[in-house]
Length: 281
Image 1 (cartoon, rainbow, N blue to C red):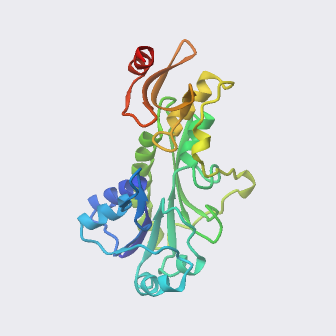
Image 2: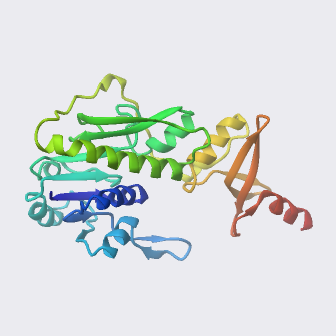
Image 3: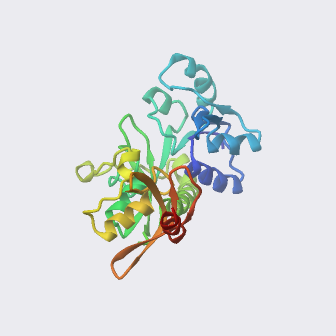
């Protein structure tokens, strides 16, 4: 079974890892270019590239899939593939690339489509206080998260579940669902079903400003923000002109209690140590 994989982050790596346990390795991995990160702007490869290099797999890092120089590599590999798989790639893939493989391009999306289309389904589900979520395998088309559904799997969403925990859990769930339905899809026995587009909801791309804790919000709302925005963009408050990122917190008698924080330009510490340091200075 030959396939091309499009993915970039830790969600993508989890999916690849599950597929690898079934001896399914992509013939080509398409991922984002290396990016400067951190205060020193060190050029850093995406997690998928690190995973692929450790297994000596072919990697392609185009700056844009819309530029003509990206086409030769994708056409050469894509036309000989049975299918392509997208899992958290982070960019729109042009339709002429989606249709290159014999069985087109599939996507593992971490929500119960058509709910939570777009770039932040995990964060938005947590922020909304949803009690149920899941994964959907779709056949991609030209519109965002719009294609017909091959399969869905529901799962409860714990009210103390943060972004990394939910991300990893849904990546595993999505990969296992794909493995279950793939033989029937490739043989033509499984037919995609159109989404109910009238019920579609959309998520947005968050910025650092979205992480600010709102003094007027409820303790529950701010707690969800801490869960949803860990590790990025990071939920934060401002004390005496200083930005403090809240890494961990809990609710107690309907009050939000901070546990672990990262003050500006300092290491992670307990909230008590932070308050003690302020008192001493």
